[in-house]
Image (tube, rainbow, N blue to C red; front, side, top):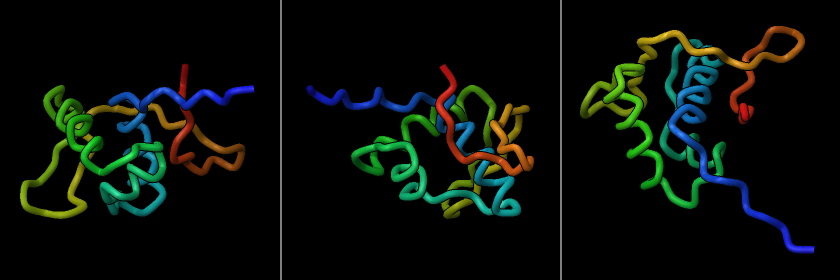
Length: 93
């Protein structure tokens, strides 16, 4: 039986992950490495185009030349655990 690789994470997947991470970590943004590891990207270079897409749509704001400086500017539905804690990443079909 061959195992199929998961499909690449979309910009919406990245946005949900960032929003959940920000909430769970009291406003600290995830690093590119955090996003890469959590969403299964093969390199950090795959993260920036998705963040740029989200920023262009006005859903996040990134401070240039500052590491881990992102803010959510639009409402995001974050999946939650039964205890109400944000789930960092759950792919929503």
